[in-house]
Amino acid sequence: MESEHRSGAANARRGTPTHPRRADAERNIAAILAAATSCFAKNPNASMTEIAAAAGVGRVTLYGHFSSREALLSELMERALSEVATVLEATGLDEGPADETLRTFIRSSWQLLDRNLRMLHAARRALPAEAVHDHHVGILSAMDRLITRGRQEGAFRDDLPAHWLVSTVYALVQAAGDQVEAGRFTSEEALDALDATLASALRRP
Image (cartoon, rainbow, N blue to C red; front, top):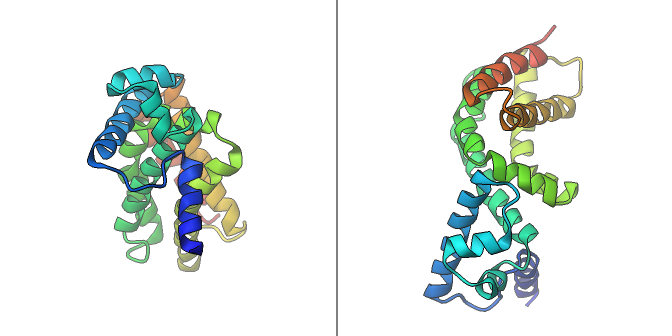
């Protein structure tokens, strides 16, 4: 009973119905998420009306699945970051030199981040900071594990706390995305700058 209550509460937070979804509802959700991804990629200020039109559904249907623009952005952010977390685990957090593992992860995940850049910017503006942080907890935890291993290997500096180094990686990735969004860097230039800056910031002095 308690697990059902938690599940219902989670669905309510996301703005989705708690009853079993019919096949047409699943199709509508898939269409909404695809349309929202496309709309936010073109315009981070895209409205729910624009997204409903792009998905080929009415506003009532859209709001029936996602109670607000924030709920929709939260779902999109969760899905995008889940893909990034999958890439991080696939790099082999406990295999090979830690600095090379980090570099491989940054380069492997950058394409995903770049593809979702405007949506992620929209989510960061629309959602409370605590909610944005909660979406990143899994990635930050895995990154802490990798940074800790790198410190033990002597690849990363140990004169600063591990949590600060994790925060540095997170902030620099965000900054690289901001530079692309502002038109100051191409995606390739941002990745190269990020790679060089991380190597310098994390290297043992």
